[in-house]
Image (cartoon, rainbow, N blue to C red):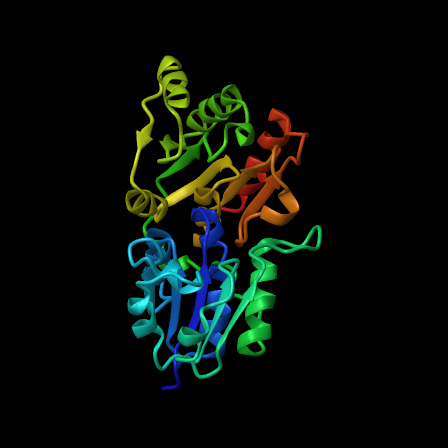
Amino acid sequence: MSGALWIARGGALGDVFVLAPALAALRAAHPARELAALGRGRALEILRAAGLLDRAVDVEASEAWRAFAPGTAGAERLARELEGGDSLLSFGFGALRPEIASTLRRGAVDRAPFPREGGLPVWRYLHAACARVFGPLPEPMSAPLAALRRGEAPRRAWIHPGSGGRAKNWPLANFLALARELEDRGLPCSFALGEAEDERCEAELRAAGIAPQRLELEALVRELASAALYLGNDSGLMHLAALMGVPTLALFQASDERAWEPYGPRVRALGERGAPATLDEARAALQELLCRL
C-alpha cells in the first residue's frame, strides 16, 4: 500500500461534514489507499465510522496546529503521524512547516477553506480541490454517510430549530406548526437541541409544551440512523442528516444557500439570505419529501 492521503480541515461540524462527498470519491478512486484527516475530532470520528476515513487526528487534542505555525514547538506527534505519507491537502491552515512537509513523499498543499467563486457549493469546491491534488475523482455517491443508517422502518421526524447563530433560525412558531401537522399525519416528532444552542430556544420550546432533547452528537447520529425526516436550519446537523440519506428540509435566511445547500439524495433547501421561506412553501416541500418515502 502506498502512503496515506491526508486532508486537514478546520471549522465547525458542518465545515467538516461537507468533506464527506470528496472523501467518498477518494475512497472509490483509491480503495487500497489509507485516507487520513486532521481537524475537529468528533466530526472526523463520524466520518471514520461511516468508512470514509482510516485515521482521524483531533487538531486540538494533539496540538497539531503547531505544525502549521512557524516558530512553535511541540509538533512532533503530527510529524510521526505523517511520516511515510503520500501528501497532505489542507484547507486554510496555512503552509505546513518545511521540516514536517518533507516527511511526506509529495509534500503539502494549502488551499482556501471556502470557494472564492460565488454560487459554487462548498462540497463541490472541496471535491474539485481533492481531484487537483490527489488525481481525477468520480462523482461522489448520493449518500456518502449512508453506512450510518439502519435498515429498520423509519420511526419519527427530527426537528432542529436552532443553529450556531440566532440569525439563521427560522421562526420557532413555524417549526411548531409543522410539527403539529406531521403529528396529525401520524408521524411522531422530536425536537433536538445541539450543544451550540442558547437557553432561550429551550425555554421557548418548553413554554409551548415541548420537551426538547439536548443530545450529544453521537446520540443524535444514532437517532438519525432511523429517522423518517429531518427539518432544520443551516447547521452541521442539517448536513449530517442529508449526507446520511435522511429526507431533509433545510431552511436558509442568513447564509448563502447556494454555497451551503446540503448534499444528499433527498434534500429540499428553501429560502435565501434576507428572504426566509414561508410556512406554505415549507409545507409544500415537506409534502414532496413525504411522498417519496
